[in-house]
Every structure is written in C-alpha cells, then in structure tokens.
Image (cartoon, one colour):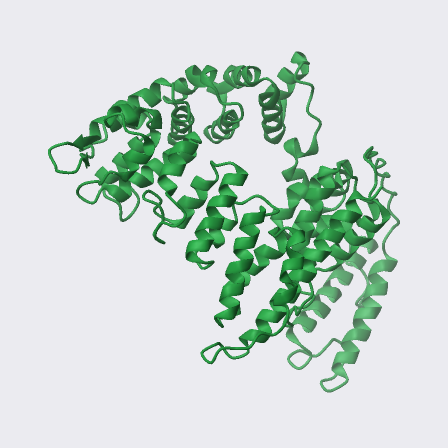
Length: 553
C-alpha cells in the first residue's frame, strides 16, 4: 500500500495542533533572532539567498512571523483598575512657580553634554534649593509634573528626601505602578505603609511582632521621636530573638532622644554576640558623659595622659596602653588596628575619643580646653591625641572644645592646634552655631584664600551670611586680578551660585567685564573669569526670582 508522507506543518501523532503551532512558531522566531544577532553576512535568512537583499528578506520574514505569532493569541481578561490616587490636601503652587518647576525639570543632565554652559545657570543644580523652599511653604506638587520629578529623583539620590516630601502621598501611589520608581517605596518609612498611632498599644504590638522589617524600623523611629522610653521598651521586648543585622539597625534608632534612661539597656547590649552591635552600644554610651562606660573610659584614658611638670615648660606625656584586655574590648575598643596603624596608638585613640571631655581639666591641672590644647605633647603624640580629642568633641557636641581645637582662623594652613585635616575642621565646625561657623570660615578665607576652603564652605548654612559671602567674593576677585586659572575655582564658583545670598548680585556687576590680563596670567583667563561671574550674577538673580514666585499669593 502506498503511503504518502505528511506535510511539514502536520503535527505528529499525539501532539495537538495548538501545541505544534506554538512550537513551530517559537522555533521560526528564534531562527530569525539568531540570524539578526549574527548578521545576514554570516547567516542567510531562511528562504533567502546571500546578497544585498538578505537584510530586506530578514525584515520581511520577521514581519510575517510577528503577525503569525499575534494571530494565535487569545484576548486576556482585563486587569483590575488601580485604586484612585490619594488626595493631597496641601495647596497647589502659584502659577509662575509651577511653570518654573517645569523648566527646572526639563533641564535634564546630559542635554548639553560636550558644550560649555556659557553664562546660563545650571537649572538642575537649583532644583534642590527650589524643593526645599517649596516644602518649607507647604506646597503640593502639580500632578502633571510628578513623573518628571520622580525621574529626576531616581537619577540623583541627593534629591530624593526633598522630592518625595514635595510629591507627597501620590509618589507612593505611582511607585507601586512603575518599577522604575520603586526607590520611593524603599526611601519611605515602612515602604510607604501607614504607621499606627503610638497610643494604639494593640496595633503597635501587632505590627512590631508581625510586620515586615521596613515597617518595624518605621514604627520604632516614629515612636522613638515621640515617646523615647516606649520605643526602648518595645525594642527590649523582642531583643533576644532578633537577628544581629536587625539588632544593629534597631539600636541605631536610639540616637534620637538619647538620654541617661537608655543606659541600662545599652549596658546590656555591650555583651551582645555581634561585635558591631557592641561597638554601636559603646559609641552611644560614650556620648552620655555621665554613663558608667564613659567613667570607665575616663579612668583608662586618664592613666595614659599626664602633665610632666619636671620640664621647663609643662608638657603632656603619653603612655599608650600595652594591651587591649577583655574589659576594654567589651566596652567597644576594637582590638585589631587598620593597616598602617600601630596597636598601641590605635587603642589609645579609642580610649581618648570615648572619654568625657569634661574630665580633662581636672586631670590636667585645672586648665581650660584652650590651655590644654596649647600644651606641647612629648614624643610625637600630639597628632594622635588631638585627633582623638577632635573626634570626642564631634561625638559629644562640645562647642568649647571644638573652638579650642579649631584655633583661630588665621592659624597656619595646617589648621588650628588640634585639627589634623580639613575633614576634621569641617566636623568641628558642625558643632558650632550657624553664625559662628560662617564667621570662622570667613576669617579662614581672608587669611588663606579659597584653595583650602571648599570643604569648610560645605558645612555653612545657606544662604551664606553676609561676612562669609563677602569673603568669598573678595577672594574670587583677588584670584581674578592675579590672573589665576579660573578652572581651579570652579568648585567654589558652583557653590557660590547655590549658596551666595542673591542680594550680593549688585556687588558683582563690576566683575562681569573682561579684565586686563597680567603678563604672567593664564591665556584667556580674563574671558573665562568674566563668563563665570556673568553666570554667577544670572544665577543669583534667577534664585531671587524663584523665591518671589514661591512667595506669591
């Protein structure tokens, strides 16, 4: 009996037609994808011949296969509609401010890549300041700008806190619909979930015991900000059953409202199984000058530092510890030093850093912090000792010691008698009030210019106080007249655009002209300086306009 072979598209016995069609369609599509990836010069499309027409044949085949694939799809059941976006009760922006926000968001990074900014302001750099002012006035974001605002915050982590505050509850709603904006859920306490009222004991206990980690962190932070003791008791109720990494995060929340009542709990945490938990507990206890740990550290550090009165000039003598015993390790002293550090100096610095600064005047002959810092230190221990005192002043927020360690602004560029680096000085300045901080940095700039001041300017309140702003402008003018490289001051100029009081624009008008260049000046420096000052003035006036738009009724 004659048997005729089945056509190529006929399914094999036992295989359904739909399954066969799906398999053959998938295979044909994969063949086309492979050909496209390899290139038609290396692989000829099915049903075609090599040559110039091969790419066209590939596209034609892909088009046919696309229609074939889609023709076999069955319509799916429509998805449920999302819930309506929550209402935002805050007032909307004034019309001019809303238009300004759209312009700021439209100036995306990279739009002018490869081209000089010229005298045009950098609008994206003004967005953080605009958001801060809008949040201060309690405005809500216009719904139509929320996607662009979230895109901007996605690309810049420094924008996220202010941008999410301004976007309000609708940011969480949008973030649940678009994976690109999921960062908003991670940034929001508890992933955007509602935190129960701290007074609702039953719901608080239920969320604390059954909630997700982010929800529990948010709950603990909320209660700690309102009722510190209640948060500590909540944490203590499950402390022994928590994972080490969770205990560390929870313990960090006690920095808010830290007080003497937290000492018993933190003392227990010194015996924790996790080294990181023990170290954090010790750090928090050392920030409480009256704690038992602070007292123990004071005794240890005091045994290492004395005044040698046998010398002609009283001198501080240092005898660093010879070992790190178990009690020191329990109190947070890290045994192993980092690479390049000696063990004894490493242990010594940790002891001094954790000792209350108030113990040193009595220990060192009743001297004031200024007098103590001015004493010479024997055997090259001054850098280590003063650096530890710097860290202690920052940790304990001691402004008197910070002033002593900073010294006068006109001190040599190496810093005050105790500051070992610009980073240390910046941290010490953070313990002072805004006005005093600005005054000190203004004096530093007047004495040393701007080359060392960038890091210090970053800790000053915005807008800069009058004396500080004038010191920066005067120093820029001096650098301009000297024919210095303007590019060396681009960082400070960028800070000035964002931080200088807009009222200073009037004083800068005279600096926008191209100056006469000294013979030893950098070629073309005058033109670049003029352009930089023109951009600065334009930016300051734009900032003034932005503030007026947000203040409009």
